[in-house]
Length: 453
Image (cartoon, rainbow, N blue to C red; front, side, top):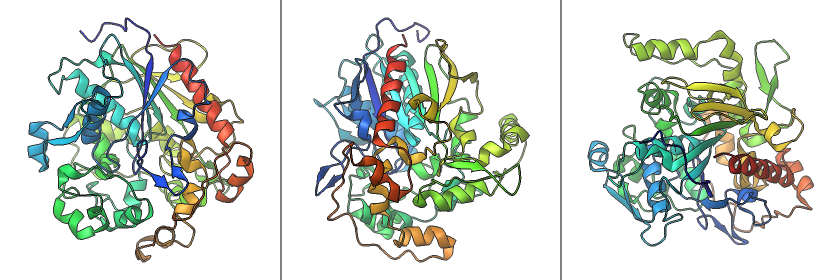
């Protein structure tokens, strides 16, 4: 059964990217392929003997669909979204075929893996473990195929930022497919939406997105990152924890205590300009979830947990995209909270959390934002979205800003990622986390994971 502890030392760690992220070789600039994970997958990074596997899943697909793609990619089989699920949401049952190309074809309870997810990838990792426990693909899988789940700035309880980007505050449903039009023109990539009948070029056309039906319901990543979407699975017990798994959240933030009042937050001096609008948006407002009713026990518990007065400020402090109250541990269900990670060996089946700056061993007041775990820490983000781009204007002006298609500004970008020139390269984008600090974070994370058994 799934209570059995892990017999062998876990040798593999799989990295799962977030919303609008990409897998190996899926984002190619004139200077070559750009890795989403930067120093986490760099050959010079000390992985403490772990084999690091880099996965690529749907950048806007639902957590369920992403988890199915992740499973197929690790095992080396065809993606099966499940007959019932696919019929319910109106897409094809079968997705990308990884037969013969599995990242870890011998994966099983005796050869389990560590899952590390950035942002939405943390939620995807939890979803995958649940599907393994349910033997969703009838392959004899169990929850103990996963030794640990590590979430880097993951919106475990959802993020209010999605409402700024077009989700409906009352329902969580995504209402502005034209937002994607902008992203699709900026970052040419593999969208992995063939099961919705969409090719990579279709994504640039809002009318095709609309007619595919992906945003008509709840089977997409925008809804799954809303507070409604996360509450639905957290409070249904679907994502309860497993007793033989280690859980860790790494929390990032780029806010400081507000100067005007003690009970508010403000973007820190070093908050990256791209994140300023969403950072301010979350600093200035309390989370208010609209409920249909308070009749169900889950609704009542949800209400109590979300409005705990001691968490008020933690819904304001954020990393540009996710409040820290959502990053630490999931609400709902039966979660045992281990508290802050310290030098003692963590216990299985409990959620621990630590600040990214603490794990990296850098000064605690450093602004570590949502992008600092990835290559978007580099000038890539400010090059992809210059301050005068339509998306930045749109975010600054709120819903009145125009969203005219932007020509892709990434054509002639040479992305300089060497260590030496790095600290100065970052000065422009407002980030403070250098490549060296990021490497230290991943080396210490890998050391931590290699010690778990």
